[in-house]
Length: 265
Image (tube, rainbow, N blue to C red; front, side):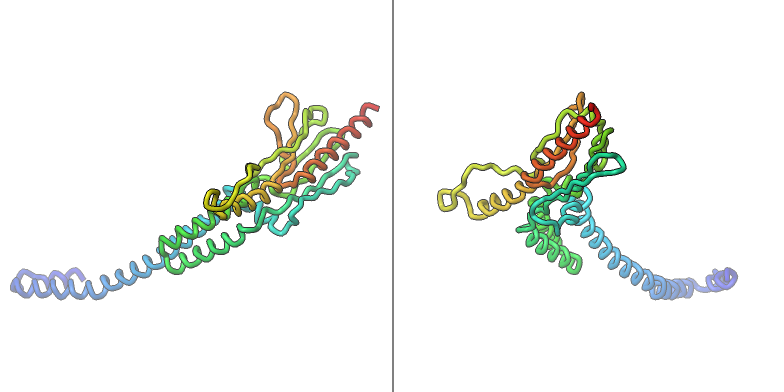
């Protein structure tokens, strides 16, 4: 092959022939390799752009789901609006087990905001418009603002009270070291000051936001437990209504007192 090229480009040929041969070679390369590379980069760029759009859409959904505990909200989406718990005896430890189911987060207006946000996000995947993506972020973000407060602990919990300890989902404290068990408010807190609509008051949208905020706040109570000599409490259960949280604290204290009396007797 090299000999053929050497003969083809031999200096014995006139200069104009060699230039013409180089032009023919460049033309052939451009129409073969060049066109091939053009289509390769065109296809790669098109699909890489779509891949980037899909990744961006996935990140938009993944961040609130995993980083901000939206997963807990989605897993309890079908729960009743009132939290509940059941108590049963545990023959293995001689104590009691409390199974707690949190209340669902307020679904209105979050469900509408999420639906519109997902619609815009799907449109962004198809059209790849920056403004549509920004609109999807706005609607999804506002929807998250209604359901994310208190979402970290809005999940089923199991509390075990035995002769040795009180155990939660991810901790265990010796029974004798318990300093207090109390109800706290862990989610969105809405001021109780009355607001008036109208020309001299606030917009109706603010009143609606206050209304839905109150509904969410009523389902964001937690039960905390703290050991003696430790200022950092542990959360036994979250996403509770006030009545359920208060009853859970009372029943856990009764079970603890009953076991303590048995041990002292």
